[in-house]
Image (spheres, rainbow, N blue to C red):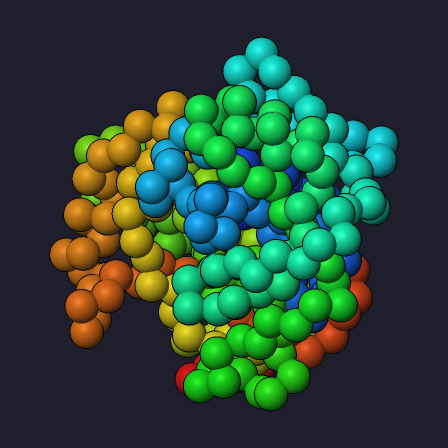
Length: 268
């Protein structure tokens, strides 16, 4: 049987904006380095998402020498990896969590507000700030960045291939915003992984990922439809939730590389 291999590594530096594919990445407790360490918040200090603002998909990120270039149509702005930020603490909401964040700069906030036509702020979540993972699925020490709930999401290419075989028009993996994609194995087998290694890193699978309307947003056009949520609801629905992908925690903090072999040690 073909071995399981890590085929894609993705980070989404600014929550709900475009992702960046990497050849390698450092694994940290809160997620891959620079993954969802920034987000946009509205005037109520609540995180902004493609669920409501689908046009966020049209902001594309590319690595630059010192950070990221963020582009929207013909406009662009730079964001440094290690930027300064304004000292005032902001209590922001990410679902049921309250997190302490800082505005990156007035310039960045005004730029995003101008592109979106909505008053908003670009904020950062410093690495030393706490946000605990749901204790029902994690230890007391497990932390997460500004992702919805868990530091990593893994999806098998076989799972997407199986879904696309059921759709009139296939969708890309970027609908599901995984951090880790692998080849080999059978569709949806990642649902059962409880302990596995990628390279030198040990990971824990904690629960399948419940999906929402965000996966109906085309990441190239920002247009919404019914798929693939409608089709997934036919065969991937349990207890009124629709699942695709596995939420993951890490035990080790080493570099991972595209092409690393994945060894599954324990199934649930």
